[in-house]
Image 1 (tube, rainbow, N blue to C red):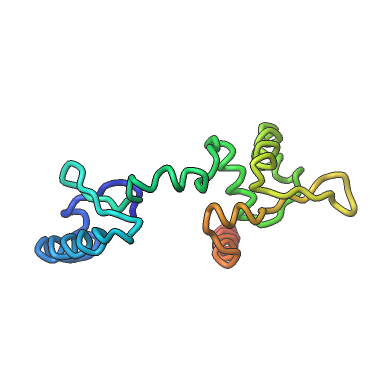
Image 2: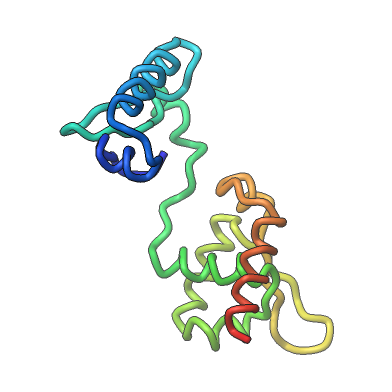
Amino acid sequence: MKGRPITKKDLSEITNSDINSINDAIKDLKNKYSDQKSALELNEVNNSFCLELKSSLNDFVEDLLPSELKTSELRTLATIAIKKKILQSDLILLRGSGAYDHIKELLEKKFIVKRRQKDGRSYWLSLSEKFFQTFAVSNDYLSKIGTRNNKQQQ
């Protein structure tokens, strides 16, 4: 599930396996995912392989997939996710004034929550439950990313 098709040669290099082992593994995966109950299928495209959702399920999951977000909005959302909770004023300093539009869009799509700061004029921005459901990311994982980034900056 690399996100793009991968060749047998690349699979061999990544896994430190010979081509025969890769062929056997691909055959096993094809058998495993050929079951009607499986939501996934192994597809071959130009001698490369990819694990994808069965095309017959596309209509079913269309409503479950995240709304279309622009790259700039995703970057703003990623910044909020890494910080977990950030003042809107600090986010604007990091992302620029265009982030006001991103915040508006992310609020409309319910990926973030906005709460007034107790002592001050800015707002706290944090992730919504929809974010965690949509992107299947845990708080623990985000904490590790934030910790890793803080250590690298020191």
